[in-house]
Amino acid sequence: MDGARTSENGSSQRIRPRVVLAILVGLIVVASLGYVALRNRGVEIPANVVDSTDRASVLLRRDDATSRKQAIERLRSIAIENPGYVDVQAELAVALTLNLSDVQADAERLRLRGDAIARGLEAAAKMRVLADQVARRTSLQQEQEATARDMASLRVTTATLRKELDVQLAQLNKAPESEPPSAAAARLKARALHASVLAAPDSLALAERLRNVESAPYPWSTLARAEYALVAGSPPESLQAVAKDLEALRQADSTLLRAYLLGARVALKLKDTAAARSLLDDAVALNPNHQAAARLIAQIDADAASP
Image 1 (cartoon, rainbow, N blue to C red):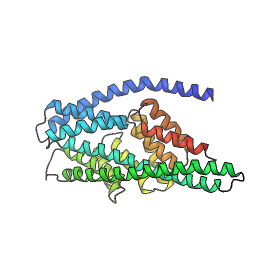
Image 2 (image 1 turned 120 degrees about the vertical axis):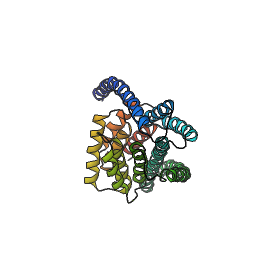
Image 3 (image 1 turned 45 degrees about the vertical axis):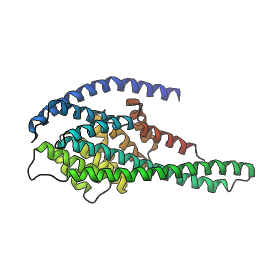
Image 4 (image 1 turned 135 degrees about the horizontal axis):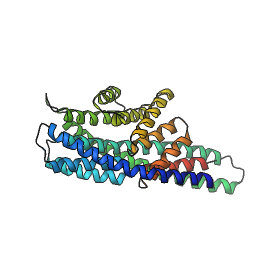
């Protein structure tokens, strides 16, 4: 165990210098792309507005709830002041969709935990020592009630997010007959990700269209296809292909933390707990505030401790 932990610590120490360099390079790329987009947009957008939008996009790469909340607040403010700025409207839709995805993943996690609790209650009923049976049943019933409360809260959150996204996507769907390529790509990115998280019938077609307008390593089309695979109940061979695509994305862009979380969720679908745990550990090493990764780690540990 100590050797494994030493290895993990060494891995984390090797990761950090790469992360710092990758973040600096990412900021330079984002800034240069912002300049190009500024020239290509059909409406005149002040440079400081483009810069603020790009900085909010950098926050989304961290993939934790706090950073995303900050990004959403900034994007909303920019969108209100610049209603004709398609890129910010689309990025706001992307951020909200990521929230919806996380809420749905939490609901799935709680559903699986509920199934495990139900199995635990069945096992408790077969305990021979009455005192042990009562203690185990009481503990599981308390956890079952807490899980039910959390599920009810998530249902409310899901309904609220869906309504907000419907309004945001309705604005983006009102595309003009002709617009700059950057604006069209921004709309497509938002639509593809949203469709994938809902497992809509046109999800894969939109993801493929997005890939055709993205540059390597095709980040958002890869993430969209992964989101779809997780929600749509894709077969193992499809999940394995998605896992390979996510691995390639992580190799090319090590600070896009969504690729780690989705990779871990895909690994769990494939019953590869060790691979999932390794990816989640990497995500937390890169961003200690990544709550979704921490929750999945806790769930893996709880399942491993269950009789």
